[in-house]
Image 1 (tube, rainbow, N blue to C red):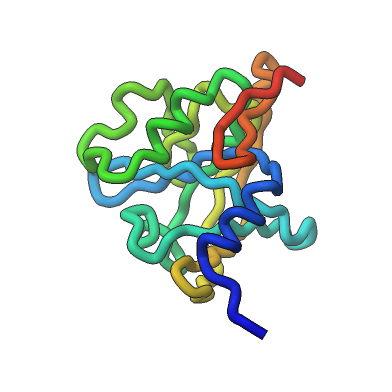
Image 2 (cartoon, rainbow, N blue to C red; image 1 turned 90 degrees about the vertical axis):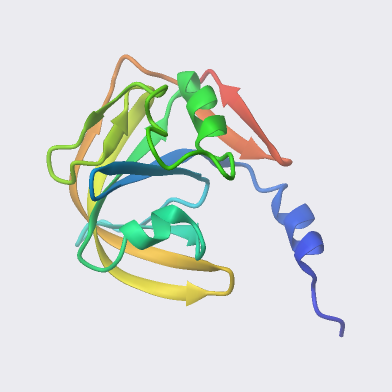
Length: 164
């Protein structure tokens, strides 16, 4: 049996429509953020979530074991932020200048105003998985922005809004 290549797997997995979130962390004085479609609630007791991040991504260094970070689960108004924060090569400095946000109380990381819900977590473990790492984190706090609705979805290689 022939091995499955990356293009084949990408084409197949693009059919899995998933919600889009932004994971953010502080690295020194800088905010670092990335768009992810791999956020998973892994356990309710204890509360644990996980996401994947490319091993070469700037965000990866900021989410080492013991580090805190925030996740913004995007509402339908978050598509522009999701697109910007998924751009390779965007500047490290001031990458969140054009994205309305506030600092999380527990992590200091950016929580986007366009989020319909958010959480803050601390990394418990990191597991290598090919080109990406799986980051598991203990949830420290959560919240809902009831005024935001819908979602940003990723499927078929595109970001789309869903009004709910």
